[in-house]
Length: 170
Image 1 (cartoon, rainbow, N blue to C red):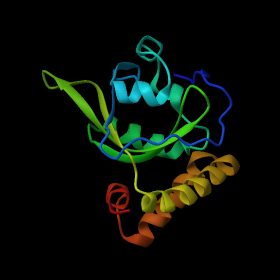
Image 2 (image 1 turned 45 degrees about the vertical axis):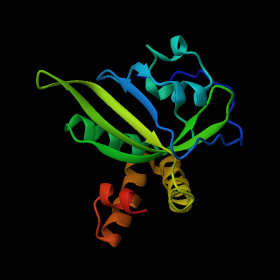
Image 3 (image 1 turned 180 degrees about the horizontal axis):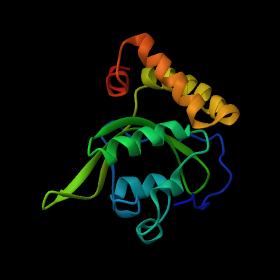
Image 4 (image 1 turned 135 degrees about the horizontal axis):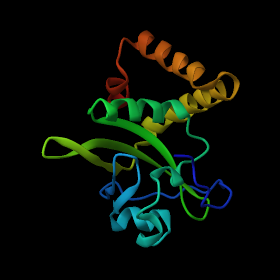
């Protein structure tokens, strides 16, 4: 499913939320939003009926490297959970950062969708993630997802870590 352009031009205005808040969404197996909690609805700046039924990628910020979403979908299709730092768009063009945990949801042993719970990231983590994502995005613009995936894999090899371990240790 392609990106739906729902928002104004991204602007350099960061929205933050409290460390004790949890932004939650649920989607079907294709990534269509089936539930959004009030904290998520509030930060996005849309009404529940404007979010539910829409593809989750409507909040994707153009600063996000596609390789992160490739990793996310690869993990979910293998029925694994994943953690990722994500920069999302708000309806007014503002942005916000999250540390997301996305897990498959099951019914009668079958994956019926995905549950994402997001917390505010630490400044220390963002000091690592922001320059890395800029490097990955730059590589993607020149050589596609394969180019950014190579950079990420080289970094992980250098650190002697899997992606999940890297994300959880920064």
